[in-house]
Amino acid sequence: MVKFNPQATVTRYTQTAIVFHWIIAVFVIFNVFLAWSFDYWPEKNAQIGSDLHKSIGITVFGLALMRILWRLSHQPPPLAAYVKPWEARTARIAHIVLYVLIVIMPLSGWLYDSAWKDGAAHPIHYFGLFDFPRLSFIVDQPANIKKQYDAFFGGMHTKFAYVIYALVLLHIAGALKHQFIDKKPELQRMSLKG
Ligand code: HEM
Image 1 (cartoon, helix red, strand yellow):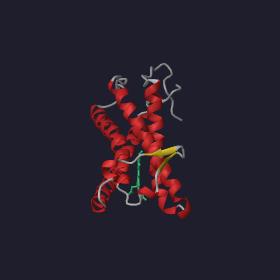
Image 2 (cartoon, protein in one colour):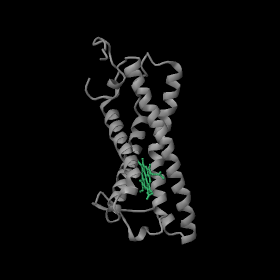
Image 3 (cartoon, rainbow, N blue to C red):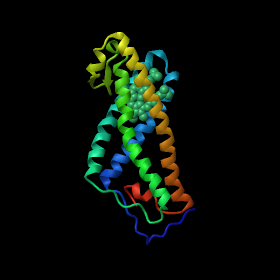
Image 4 (cartoon, rainbow, N blue to C red):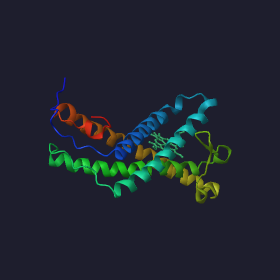
């Protein structure tokens, strides 16, 4: 059982930062598992899974842009004093790359999907509410060019996914190390309740 000093002051992120962090984290992780499950969906329901993946991804894209704008105008709390200099450097780089990934991961998916040869027959139903547009500068290309875009952006989407796997694991490992090995109140910094 880990014991924390109740007198210690925890410097917390703001409520807005915490809400952005957890909604985006849950959506990204859910979307990764959803993508891994695609091969096991029965043919007749495959479109539902695919639309769900795209709808969540598009939502992440919007939230990520809002989060970055918000972050540019709001300073996060300083890293805790117990964080070693090399850990602080690693964390800063990982955080910047994670910000970039939550934008380019959905963007590469949207570019990839816009190049899909059968896209016209399968509009993106955004959570079943309305049809989300594809990018016309790709959709309107001749079939041979679209095929090249499809391979290029599909490849990017897959490669960015590998970077996400590595960084999300590193990020979680870092937080858990401070919490359970160093026995510091790390998770409290990103939780709404103390
Ligand atoms: C949070 C954002 C997103 C994450 C984390 C994510 C993650 C993934 C992952 C891990 C894969 C499997 C890649 C592979 O192993 O080859 C995948 C496939 C795919 N994603 Fe995304 N994605 C996101 C957003 C989007 C968006 C916005 C779209 C389109 C509008 C999209 C369209 C696709 C498509 C078409 C596939 C291929 C499915 C198949 O193989 O049939 N993704 N995505």
